[in-house]
Length: 372
Ligand SMILES: *Cc1c(COP(=O)(O)O)cnc(C)c1O
Image (cartoon, rainbow, N blue to C red):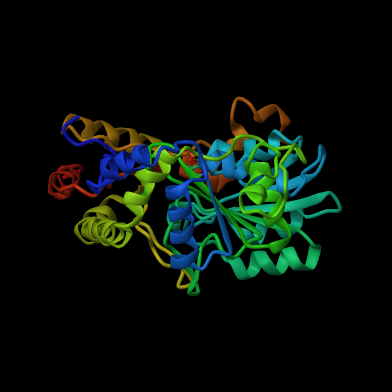
């Protein structure tokens, strides 16, 4: 492919910081660069507590442990999301209740949450699809009324806001991804944000394999040992050093991505309308962090033809999630309603290449040549 779907951003300082981490002589987790990253997140976004993890998947698994999800507890989430959103809770034996997407946005339709709440419901996991905020006032009101926990799967939502509040800071817990396909990346990486102070101490223990090692190194306890369950959720200093080099450039990265996003949006307006292809829209309550530029085709035939057409021009565009309620793993367990919008986005959504170095011209020209 002449134009890949994604090309990981490099600030140029990654190797320098990794070299510095090597010379500091401590490569396991929770060292100098991990603390630099934590400080960046608490200072820049006002997160109360941030813990780097080896992936967003791990951050979500920590969330499920912190909420003490037990077999049979019910957790509500969208079907149009990544496997890990659901799998983290499935691992604890939760019963997953899926809701549909909105008619005008692939993000979850929060008005469908209330009918699914019952005495067994323990948590709502919202997914800010494409970095576009769910209606968090509505979600938090429901959670308060029914004493439920809210986890924000903010994997795609770095540096995006709901009514001026940064995403990941609104629910009880938030999870971010630094996978190479995300705006800020370190190959594989993630972050757990802890907004509810009740979870702060235990989060550190789960993170450090069920030990109170973090408290020990701060001098708060005189020996450390096995005090709870946990796992090795913390990344090495090599990943943290790499990530820090990206965090320093976050504003430049976001500006560039938004510029590319706007180029697509403007150049494709008339073309999309003439073919019945929908461009992204969003409510007033959210910002756009330009994680993704997607189009919604009329049907799966049009999408296949469009992907094929772009491939002929050496451009890799890709579709996205397939509804989890219809997945090979889950479909036999699913007894809820049909989720027509989630299925429609599974069949009709196309993601265009979007990365820092991209020159949109070739992609736009190839698209404009389709259907004319
Ligand atoms: C990327 C992504 C994840 C998983 O992130 P990893 O860091 O790869 O584990 C989870 N949820 C959503 C919505 C994602 O986009």
